Image (cartoon, rainbow, N blue to C red; front, side, top):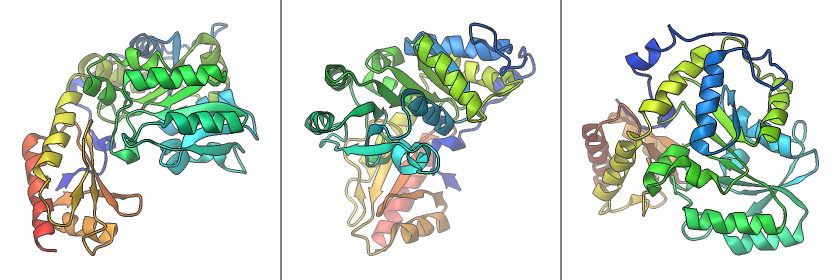
Length: 345
């Protein structure tokens, strides 16, 4: 079975797992006056994450959802308005900051342009019409097919947000996929946002963990919110050690995942009824099945019967995600299965 449901299925290598055995451990939740915990391996990971993103400090979380939630609640109070797009993961899947029983924040939805990046006119109109406390962006953008917001666009978004004195938080779950796709460093992307979250447990291949990076003051407040949300951890060096390995060894290999995704999309251009995403930029490929006569669930079920496990997303699309452990041969087999399904429609 070729499993392309998500890059969260990436498995750690033996070399990565061995780092756990020698990790220096301590109580990460027991902090000193500077806000640092007692787990030295966690501290090393946080320092490395801050350096790579060009931010002053970073804090480790068990998941990207918890890190994003903490970030938004660090900026905002109940009743505040937050700019998100309608397909953004924070809004569509994580949701907790907008739950009336929890975060009590008010989402204000901006539009994406034809490139599936934030539309500047939409942002400006909404900033003028509302008292916005935070702008959230996503890079790469998951449900748009892993599209990347480039540096020029990010600079324009930053300038607009500064005009209205609105901070920017970036959900960068696949930040390093964007960086290698754009041919830049992660810090080049992050210079245009106030805070960023990225995941260790997707294409980077670590078992667990996400980092939230920002200014010293922001991270200090975020640590307090993390504790309030039950996010403190004890000997979290067993999480941090594989994360350090991932950041030191696995970033450049993301190019292969991006390349396999583009190969698959390019190989599927001439299908009769299955429409393949144009302009694949990272490790995600979307299939539009609205003209196949099948529901997306039925389409994915046929693929699974033939040995390809893919995931329904949105109303009529299936998502293929390429990651470490998925070879070019696997991508070719996935292409053949999709072609076979389309030929039988």
